[in-house]
Image (tube, rainbow, N blue to C red; front, side, top):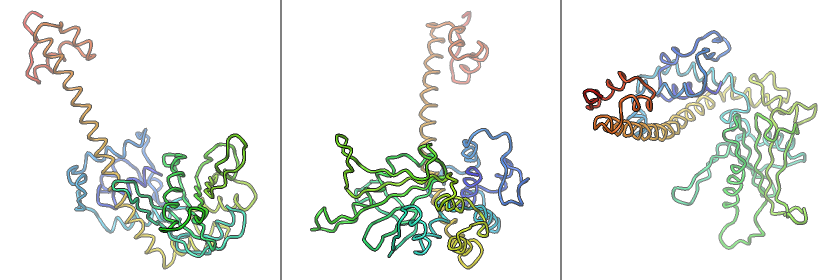
Length: 358
């Protein structure tokens, strides 16, 4: 599913053409709204092989012109299929369902924090800019503030790549940096909560929650600085509030969601007036995905070119040694794991020759 999503986002952004995509996938599961990968695929790297079909210069420069020509009617079909398959573990849907709705956010926080909580403000996809030039900014899936001024960041995470524990530390620090105004005392800073809801068991202990707090090593006492990190096990299936909530998070269809509050909110964005906002969110995400992908590809491509240049330089040095008679052809061919005839051909193409009689 991640590979299909990546291909789809690149297609929506106009970076690949679905006609190309169809060479690599079949439509056996078309009615379910997703592609099934052929058995030839052995890794996610196949996504990136599609870049061979693209105009690299345009992608790297960030131009938004169509590279191969985008079929917008087809893009609508792709977007609709993506939306139909989304669950609350997708941050596009999750940010709208909770980030635009205090009622659903309070419901989620009551279950996770196991107490009543009154939210006075909530925003989805809230960008926190780093004041340091060149510093990394972050976008919170859901940023809530309760009646006591506590800031709460709620994140969903499908894969393990973005689950490094230091991410929680960074999110916490970015929120903290915005809580105090000039002249305020440090003791006035409010509590902060960073909540990660993972589609896996982060610590593999089978527990529904993992609460992280600083403690004094020598005494074991809680440090009490007001910083809280909570990991939620999205695979927990207990017969309790959090178990039922996580089951609801995995449902694609609103009617399968047991919580009436969540079911109505998801239906609004999947089936009713909010479908347009959901489609636009997917389009915007696709463009951002393509930009980030282009940056990563540029780095990878640059490193590949560097390594290729080093390898070529080493080969040329070896060819020179053979041509000057400093190393015999058999030994050189052995280093390159090729035959002498293949070595002769490569040297000839590069402008070198094996000495007569060598």
